[in-house]
Figure 1 (cartoon, rainbow, N blue to C red):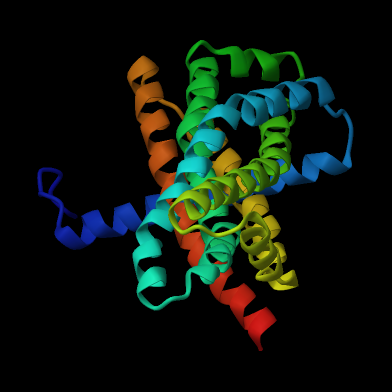
Figure 2: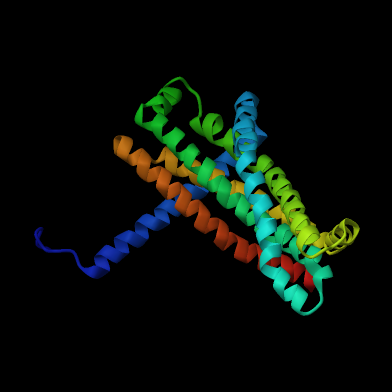
Length: 267
């Protein structure tokens, strides 16, 4: 028999921590599976889905437009010196298009949406848990996953590729303006090279990554919100955790997706 007053060992603490993380990952995977499986059986809450599309898509548009424009501007400002040094200013359109469509557009947009919407989802659902609205749904026979999680997942997956496309275009516009006024590139030269620099694999990356990122952002926000404990303080912790976990997961996922797409389209 172990003494009840015996202090825990380092091994025991680490073991319990690993077990909690594994259980948390299991619960998260179950939430993802349930949220997607609800698409194949009624009822479908399309009104809630459209409301979330408006909140996530239209609500995020100002920050995506602003950020995308200045990302394109900064890219040209930072690279123009090197292009001018080697006399290859014509490559500006290629560099801006490839960087935005492949990496910066999807990733930066996802991080912006994580800060705005993943935190909002976590705080909204966390508040509903604290005020026992989720328990009331279950008592009335409504599946909270079908009513609360699935519409947010669908909305985020649908809106993030569109927001990414907007960010890419606005970034190209910003890059073109700097190229035109600073590098003296003609509009036809910039846009011709920017469009021709993109091939099918680049477009697939630019569309596929936001879909995966949207699934991550929505499910992480919902997971953190539905597991809130400890009242209003728990809501604050869940909101912070949702942003951190979603952002880190997006960056990690981007690494593996980039490797996969490069292997597929460059092999």
